[in-house]
Length: 235
Image (cartoon, rainbow, N blue to C red):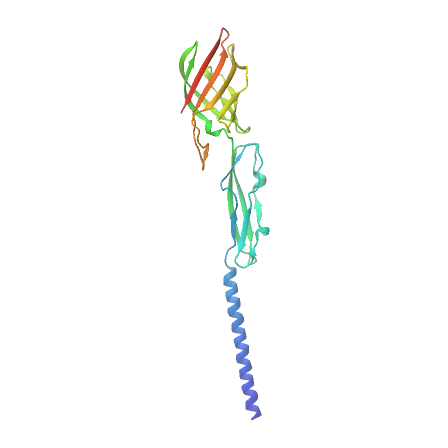
């Protein structure tokens, strides 16, 4: 009788052990399934991010979350920030990476465009120039924003003289100011000049630079007399 009791006890214990083993396998299987989920990185701020020349890059921030590990933002590594040259126009990429406890890696990318605020004024223009004493002339001019100095512009065929003048774009009030008494060559001197942006629209829209026109008012000395002129720069 005692023998039969011991045999039944062994059977029961074996069954219990089997149930425990199966439970452990099931639990581990469920845990493994959860850990195959990739962590998520969410970028704060703008993406793409536009950065004016000669300014400073400030990290907008980020969040990282994993279904098993929870908040893992502190484990995010960032690469590419040191490659940003705030003194040169260009496109730069910042890579954010994070690894969860299961060894699964996720990444996110932020595009940073270093721009000149005056980029919207760059391009080729058809110009109608009307002067008090010189009359009306038409010519083409090429305007270029600097690649290294923010708001700096050069007009390469100013007044049709085949000489260039440089100005500073004040984007907050859409005006262009020029240094006085710039030499225009051939005995001509720019006494004073300023420009007004005609179309008051957004200069940057996504990755597209919105082109704008200019009215330029100036006086110059042609070696004989002073003339007062207005130039209409149109695309």
